[in-house]
Length: 177
Ligand code: AMP
Image (cartoon, rainbow, N blue to C red; front, side, top):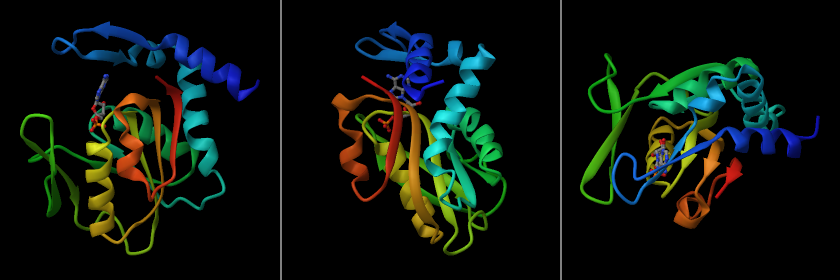
């Protein structure tokens, strides 16, 4: 099966929800991808395949939909999984990075011992929008001296130019809007 056909099948399962969670946001609902195991498997394969020969040691998944895709991608690549979480959720010593939102600030955390210096890291999320979340995660991984091999997402909202924040990294997305 060609990857073009796979990606078209995945795109057909992404549901647009206008004005959710607030007016003006066109929310990309990925739950129909998850509820069809054939499509879910295709998504995992297509997100992971460019990194098959990259000797990835750890998949870092971003809370919360990055966990849903990140854990099976780690299994697919036969490597470990590390969660990056919203503040106050991780139980042990953490590194923290603050980042700007449209209105206000947010932060993300990772366990201090989650990555060893020089390990090859693949970062996973469901969607790249402005790139703030991805950039903050790259900073966390860099604080722990991980080697960021790539960032893979199911969906990219190209008009928000998230890639510009991630210029020094390899970014792979399946479905682009
Ligand atoms: P950003 O930091 O702007 O790149 O936002 C990326 C994060 O916000 C991802 O973890 C997404 O899950 C979520 N997100 C942003 N915009 C949308 C959207 N239109 N539909 C669904 N999720 C979104």
